[in-house]
Length: 195
Image (cartoon, rainbow, N blue to C red):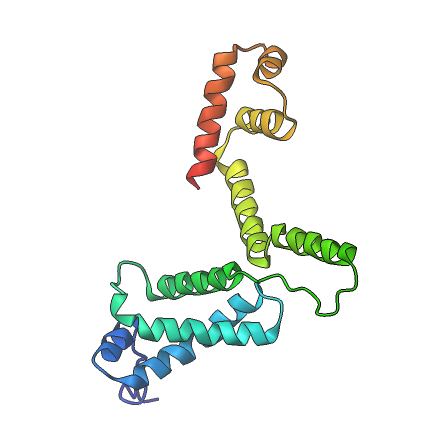
C-alpha cells in the first residue's frame, strides 16, 4: 500500500479560518458555520421551548459571531468564544421584557384585576434559562462539595445551610467552639464559591 500524503487534505484549524475570514475569505465562515452549527443548535435547543426559537437563536448567534469576528482575540479557544456568545444571545432573549397584555373585551373590573395579578405572577417566575443555569450551578456545587470538602466541612454546610441550625447549636453538638465552627464554615464556603 502506497502512502498518498497529497490526497489527505488537512482541515484548517479554527484560528486559521478566523484569520482567513478577517482577510475577507467568506468561504471560511461557511466552514466555521458547518463545523459549529449542530453543536450550537443542540446547546440552544436544550434551553428553549420550541424548535422555531432554537433555529432563530442559532441563526442570531452566527450573525453575532460574523459581525464580531474582529473582537475575537484568541485568548480563549474559538469554541469557548462562540459558546460565550451563544449564552449571551440566549440570556438576551429571555431578558427581553414581555409587556403584559389585557384582553380587548373586558367586561368587569375584577377580570382586569385578576389578569394584572396573573401577569405580575408570571413575570416573577424563573425563565427556562434561569432554571437551566440553576441546575448547572447546583451540579457544580455538588461535585465540589463531594470532591473538595472534607467530611466535617460537608456536615457543617449541611447543618448550617440546609438544616438551618444556628452556629451555637452546631458548636454544642460537635463539642467545638463557635469560632472553630465559623472558621471551618468560612473555609468550606470559600472553596464552594471559588468554583
